[in-house]
Image 1 (cartoon, rainbow, N blue to C red):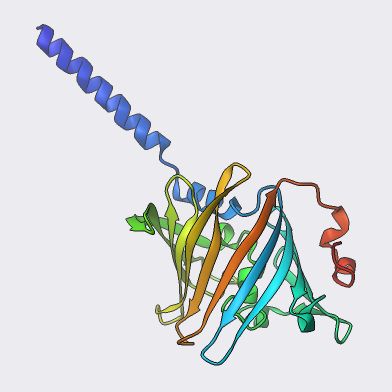
Image 2 (image 1 turned 30 degrees about the vertical axis):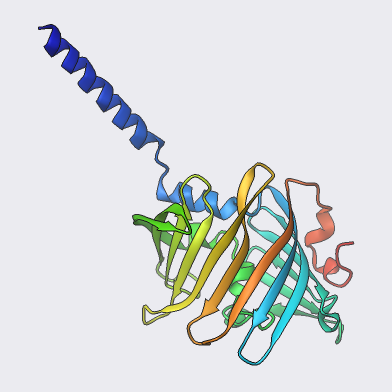
Length: 254
């Protein structure tokens, strides 16, 4: 009798433990949202270097970037000298680019969003993406795999009908615990990998872990790659409200 009661209690405890574990597991939407917000905070400031490598040349671009939420971003190019003063503004899904050599502000049309950003393997769409992964895609967890020593959720994201996106399908590997995207594959209309991003360096900043070095490659450009390093990151700081304005494109944040 005592044995039966003991087994019943043990069984109940196991069921409770299993239920708690299931309840603690985040939904795929929560994973995507938390991963998407990781590099932003309420506001953020970063200093970064982008290195573009091709079979014929290499060049580096140094920048500063400010963000507010998912909808606002301002980028100022510092070097090389010929590009210094170039600025970008993102408000929602709209983007503007100021070119100081011709003293002209250009609004980037939707047809140009898939084009290369400053000659890199990143696109204007990568820069402008605000809440597109949350709003424009449906997601499912396809399993768990190890990437770079991290156990990751493998997440398949499929574009919703008529969504204004470049890639109909994206597969990403999000590290459990840190929510850092360690790898992402972007598929073309023929369901072939068009581009692939990897994150191979993780640092702790402001109470969170973020990817500090990423590499983007393009399947259509063998031998090309773009590396991006974040030399400095700050989160939840005060940013002047006029930072994210078209007027600021011509003067930049000081």
